[in-house]
Amino acid sequence: MAQTPDIHAPAAPLASQFLERLARIVGETDVRTDPADCWPYGYDNSRRQALPQAVAFASAHEEVRDLVRLCNEFLVPLVARGLGSSTTGSSVPVTGGLVLALERMNRILHVDSANRALSCETGATNAAVQAAAGTAGFFWAPDPTSAAYSTVGGNLACGDPLTDPGASLIALDAEVVLTSSQGQRKLRLDEFFIDYYQTALEPGELLTEIHVPPATRHAWAHIKFTPRSVEDFATVGVAVTLRAKDGTCDDVRLALNSVASTIVRAKQAEEVLCGKPLTDPAIREMGEIAATEVDPTDDNRGSADYKRDLVKVLVPRAVQEAMQRIV
Image 1 (tube, rainbow, N blue to C red):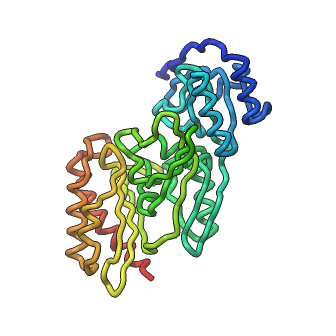
Image 2: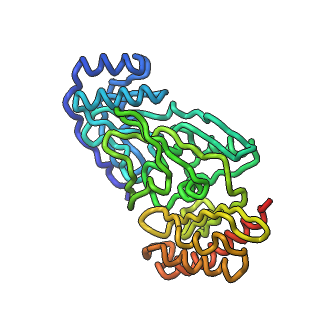
Image 3: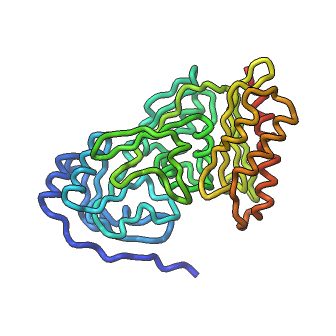
């Protein structure tokens, strides 16, 4: 039987002065106030629904900053939205207010194939990033089943520990740009994920840009084990990048998804391999240590013990696959 959507009553009307200034920031054609136009921006895949009082489409960092300041001044609730594919209700405006639609901030800003670097705005879809990376001969791990309508920024901002892109991006030393009325700050992605569906975003901050810097570790692998198809969420996901010289690991980054309340950077496991010859015993030890850094739970994809055993197997397998790409 289908669930009844959780529909919330609309809030009181917004002040005319607020709406006038809103239109000046993004332009009259990029503001929606008619309930029929606002309704599609009041729900996500959680089946919750609430009617926003207005929707604004930003296309630049300065507009995002000014909209945050305006909402703060008038005490208007502000909800940022990618494309609404989340199942958590995180983009549902349950108290009314303004929905800030970031779908037009979808530009691929920079692709540097020589340095394996890519920058994009937060509203770029995983499919668009996949296509841009593909033109340079690289692969981008999209969110399962929703690559065409899941934005990169929305995917990361939800803090979902099951998704693939976060692990790949941590292994690639990615940074996020967080924008507020006070300006911008950058944060490494492994510091951005805090806990289950929790991130380092402060009140009034929005994720507006993702940077993947020039690669310093050119050997890489991303392995996911799934109970069904490759499009499913991983039982365990492993992403690794490494650099080696004369058979010795100079530097390594290891990230795992679907194994804890947040995506894990396995720093202790990295230390096991860094500076040591890439021998089978060292690689196996890395997997053993990585299994002690995760905290999986029992679910329909497997027991916690089963997932730890998978980490012990998949981490060495990922390192061995990455070693085949050492140049």
